[in-house]
Every structure is written in C-alpha cells, then in structure tokens.
Length: 376
Image (cartoon, rainbow, N blue to C red; front, top):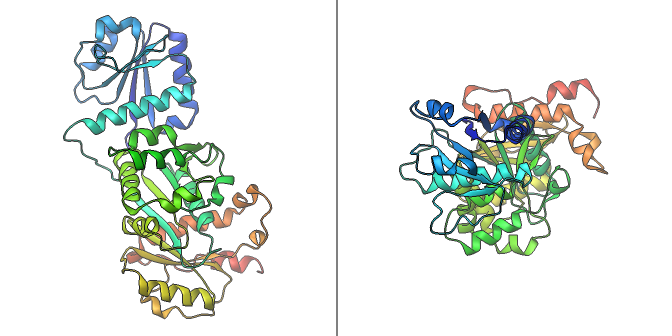
C-alpha cells in the first residue's frame, strides 16, 4: 500500500531532523515517507504540484501564515504547550511537541485516518485481505501457524496485523510489545456507534523484531466471551477501512461462539488446520455438518510426519498443504522456541502460496523435503 506522505514545516530543524531519523529507523519507515522544510516559500512551491495527499505537520510558529491556506493535505500543528484542539475557534488539531515520538506519530496517523474517514467519496484501491486460522480441535497449532504467517508476510514487505480472537491468547507471551490493549478497543466497540479505526491506530502493538502489528487479549476472558458477532463485524470493518494493512490475520479459537462464526463469515480465506488423527477427523466432520459451507476454506494438515494414516475424503476436496511436525515443539519451555524453526516458518510461506494459488496446481507436499532430511 502507498506510504503516508508527511510534510514537516518546522522552525526548529534539530527537532525536525530528529523526528525524520526516528521515522526512518523504526517500523514507521514501512508506512510513512517524511519530507522536511524550514521555509514556507519552498513548501508552498512543492504544494503547488497537483494530487498531493497526506499530512502537513506545521510548527505553530507558522500558524498565522498557514491556518487559512487551502491544501489537499491534512493540516496538524505542533505546539510546545498542551492545547485543547476542541475549542470552537480551533479549526485544525494541535499536538504537543514534547511527547514521545512514537506516540506523536501514532497520533498523527490516527488524526489522518479520522479525517479521511469523515471525508466523502473515499475509495480504497487496495483492500485488506482477511485470513483466518481455525481448527476443530485444540493443540492443532493455530496460533503458532498464524504468527509465522504474519512474520513471513511482514518480512516480504507486507503490512500485517495479527488479531487474536481467542479467550486466552498464548501468542501474547511470544510477541515483543505491549499486550492486552485489545481490551480498550472492546470498550469502544460496546460504547461507540462510530468507526474505531482511529482508536485502533493508537492502541495496536508492534513487534519490531517480526515487523508486524498485533492485538491480543490479556486477562479479558469475560469480555471476549461477551463479544457479539456485530462487534466483530465492526472491528474487522474498521481494520479494513483503515487501508493501512495488506493482510489481517485472525487467530480463532476452537469454538462456535458468535465472535468466531462471524470472523469466519468475514474472512477472504479460512485456513482450517487438521491433524492426522482419528478423533480430530471425527470432530472436523461433525463440525462441518453443523456449520454453513464456506467456499473460502482451505484444509491444511499440520504436524505431518511423512505418511498419512486417516482418510479425509469427507472434506469433499483435497488437502491444500501439509505442514511438517517439529519435534522441538513437543515440550515448550520458552517463547524463543516458537521462532527457532526456520524450516517451519519457510513452509508456512509456501503454504500461503499454495492457498492463494490452489487452482494453479501448487505443491501439496511441501513438508516432504524436510521430512526426508531428518528422522521424526
């Protein structure tokens, strides 16, 4: 997706350069392109070019000159004082200059999103695709597959949001960032009829090592159980409406709770993990009979050891892929273990290719190369 253009006009170039360096050295570099100006005349020359979009961040020293200047950019002013930008005489928002840069940029993104959503005639050239990961039994590896999908896509330049819809998210302890902020979004989902997109831009967490954003519940079991299908619809619609992410990966728990069923309905692709296990086959067949037929389901066998024992003819379609069994994950003792299997991570990406190109005859035995190289 196209980067947000940030034009900065500041009389304090040391501050402006520090802001630019921060953006270019952090995860914001993947989403934002910054251009610095110290003179109004030079900025106005650039703005004369047609079809500019993005944010114009202006030091309040230039407020008298530019408050009435017409531009297609969203104007935001920087102030050394904490100001109330909700007063009637204030047309444009003000942000406090001396807040942490990460929070400042998140506020800029949120304000831009809010102004874009309130505008008329907005279109999205690139819609966020929604990929859900589901299974009929626990311990199928949904979360570990979902986070590796997010990592692989992010490492290939996509903007990814991982969203856990589980009552208890084990992924919270695998990711480097502030977990549990989904609870605040749940509050807004219940109490606001408007889009929560701007709030989401502020509340999402970021794993700088794996390069993707995420939202996971933390000690919000009751709130997750009370979550309705309509609230899920609003949440996913708000994420897609941001036009920030290429892919939303939704990690679903094994249940038919309304929030899970609605997530399945709203997914572009459902990766349904199955194990080569007689009991899992029975649960999958039974669950499929109780649920509506989703044509977007792709069945993927997990923990594949090289030979398939059980029949899955009842699926009515072939397995899309087989992910390998990882012996090192038989007993988990730390978060580091989750990320140590390069072969699994690579195979997850091959699986994604097979899922997206199933009709083109993608390989369905991606685990064999690995299985032939070591005894399992």
